[in-house]
Image 1 (cartoon, rainbow, N blue to C red):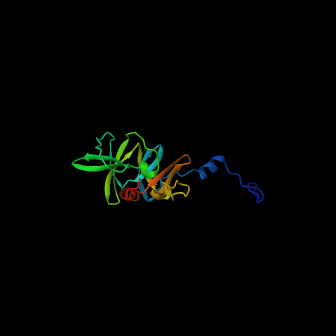
Image 2 (cartoon, rainbow, N blue to C red):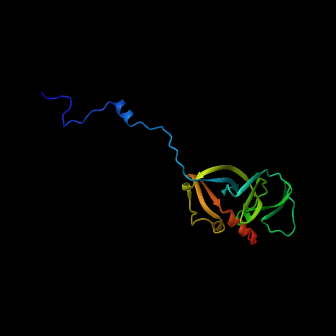
Image 3 (cartoon, one colour):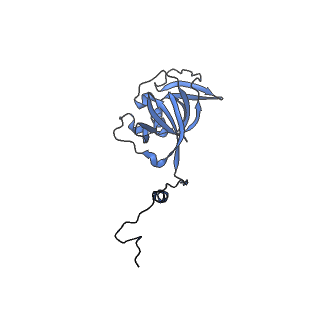
Length: 179
């Protein structure tokens, strides 16, 4: 007696539900401890930039009174009084070759390169953790003014790119009077 159900020449038929169940997506969450870096995302002259979260000590409102000090370079807006301490307030646009703006924005209190200073930004976008694997090397196509200060590029989608600034390089150039 021969088995008429399965012939060796016929493909085995699978019920649709069985196939879907077999190929179902596994919805279990896998915890992957990928190293991340915290970024403070902001805009200058309409362009997207970020500073490492470890360099940004505080985010201040932009309505802090700023006191002008004669003889300072164009990149120094003045000084601010913050809880009993006088902090310089710099703008990055002259250093980065960007047009300056009268937009008051916010102030990031940044500590890097042995200095602590306020940095004026036009708009704070976000503070987020980004996987290190998503940070790409700075492209050679960056404008020459930006190249020394951009350590990486973060592109969360095809239409958005953010340049990660090297706070130590920025403050070193500021100390040398560049910008």
